[in-house]
Length: 163
Image (tube, rainbow, N blue to C red; front, side, top):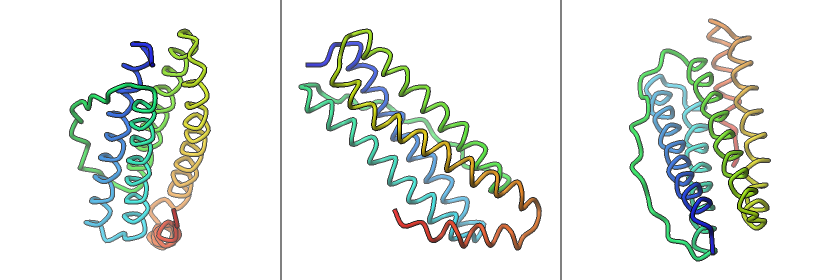
């Protein structure tokens, strides 16, 4: 059985993961409007991945005898000025998620909840990958600057994302 502090933190993280999914879907919608199908597809895959993260925590809570209490999800930003702005926002968002995961790990460690610490290792590793990926795309967009050819090459590259 999960201790209350761990349970509460994990329940809150389910909400944050669903918010992440919602945010990335909003970004996909922007890219669809801007006729950047590769970026849109990439963000749709990110949307799906974030839903999977939420469900992973959801299932873990139930596996440990808890009950998931879904919280309200805030409306995500829907107006953006550029692909670069989106990836700057996304990177900052992923850094926030990383901090949230680290906070849950700290709570689990204080509660001597080894199972949750082991469970969270996957998320810690995943966040390293997420921050790296968003940083790489942001840096490509910075290098491309206002070059539309560069933007379209990045769009084509991102459209090949398989997962």
